[in-house]
Length: 398
Image (cartoon, rainbow, N blue to C red; front, side, top):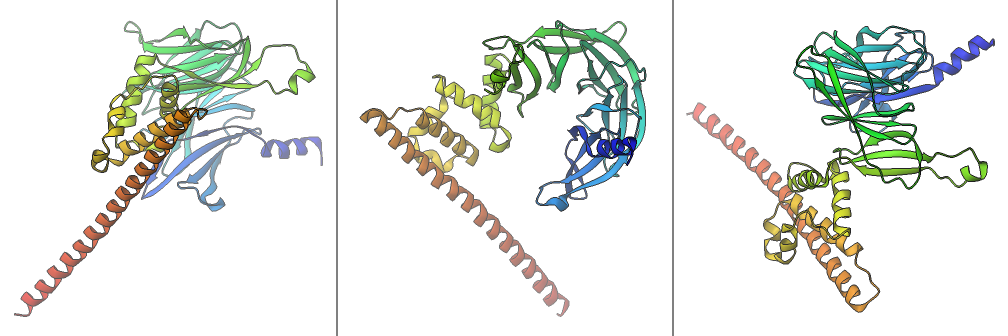
């Protein structure tokens, strides 16, 4: 085997980056599409069924080879438009391509060049945001620079293209979209929020850069960032900015921080809304529950009404399941924070444990009631349909 053949085989096996599409629902089948950028330049689309139960639920459905260059990043657009989605692909050569994907056919329809110049400035990160009806914004980072592309959602045409520079002096290491904001990190340990607006004069994209405060105890290099499901926290992977030292490296000094994104008052308001909303399952708000726990352990109850519900045991069975589960989480969190070093602490912990147990029983009974109610309704419906068939048969035979 020649070196070229060996390189082709190894590059075909090496994945550079991956990104997930929004959830697709067609013909009662739910699935995600995962775009995987291979080092040989091929972009693979993998279909992942929901729920994922076995290896058979994952399959490669299509491949495309837009450029003969090594990709460095891929990013899906947040919302489908007319059954189509976009994948922004950045390359080590500095080029940026936009792949138009048909969600139903699970294949790339066409490829459009967003930045065709081979300036050899590697694309680092990219992120999408819906600006308004019919327009999407794509931000792409290249070292210290930020490129913005205003794109028509229906035609994929580039309406505006601008270059921006923030308040950082070193290369950008991460870029994510959270709600109306972008959050960006750079090597020197700086975090910034980016607020994108459209100029009323010429329609160009204007970006306001604002520093995001951190609680780092020392100067740290940021490797990358992500966000919690509801945008409550920014998750930051960091490393001390020191000279390379093998003994120091062996102590594994990498640290992951969770930093609040919004002001405390705004976070409390949104957390209370999500915690009490019966339509939002608990599994969809893990970051809100963590924020709730942190508030309780610092002596702040963001839902004061829960304190009253604890003593109103006669009302528990009339409450909805979501509120009961939040109440149980509230008491369990308090219980875990009670010191059991004194007789009083032991008694309080035991009382909280008993209350949590009672709430668990009521929640289980509520679920059983719902199951039996569904069964009875189903049987009643079948009985009614059978009665209608009998009466129809009798009337026909009179």
